[in-house]
Image (cartoon, rainbow, N blue to C red):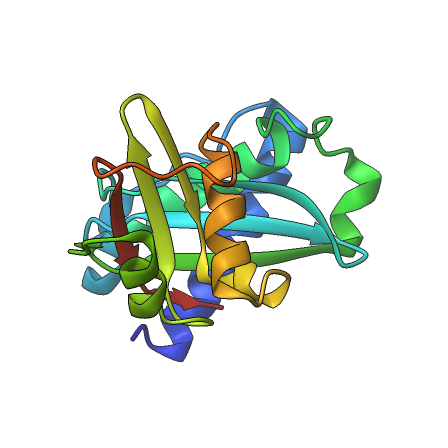
Length: 183
């Protein structure tokens, strides 16, 4: 768990990076050595933007490749300006923007012998899932449980996000679960 102070630092960093993007078109570059050790550790994050309770952008990565502070700064900027589902954020939208940061735990591969066995192992409201099948891949953060509360529905929508039919099943499907610290 991050300290309250470090959570606040990351929230401020996300807004600063979005503001920098509005001014320069680029993510905020930071000197990672100026941040506490906890924020220098490599972590995978997603940054989700809402405006008037509607999704406005969400970008992140599943594997830790950057220090936590850098990852949040980059993903906040990318969610605001590079999410292909939305037009780039305009300056007049910044005041109404709600930023959610999800710091991902290490994904754990699930072992199952059927789709029903998998459904029985999924923890609603807790698990984020990564589905992989050949070149198809998709993930849902645990926050998606707020709108998809049924486990089977959650899994079927994840299949569709990965580019598969909702009733698709194969013995080669791989599923990993992860938890997040969200604020």
